[in-house]
Length: 121
Image 1 (cartoon, rainbow, N blue to C red):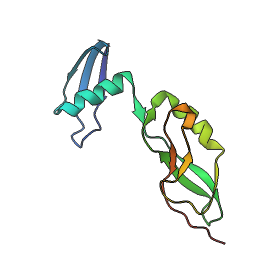
Image 2 (image 1 turned 180 degrees about the vertical axis):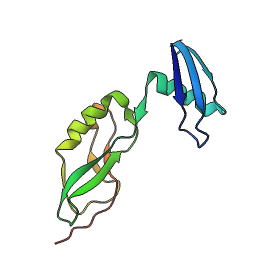
Image 3 (image 1 turned 180 degrees about the horizontal axis):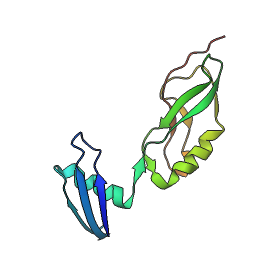
């Protein structure tokens, strides 16, 4: 199989070509640093993304608050993460990095607050 991958590990943004049959038979060309091959391996066999969303918040002037995953989650689990986050309603005050959902969708990754909001009357 052949796949083109653009590395996001560093600012170079190398466009790499991966040729593989399985994890043990991977040839990567186009990377300018060793991080590129590792990134390409993950992207071909276990792609992950940071999950971001907004949730409702009560007790402050804002109606919505940004949240994100503490670590990257498997790409095929993003919709399940969205389903779990969809019905969350937070109550102010909330501090940045407070855990909003533990182990979202069974991924082992927490959803955390992406900003601090104080309670306002």
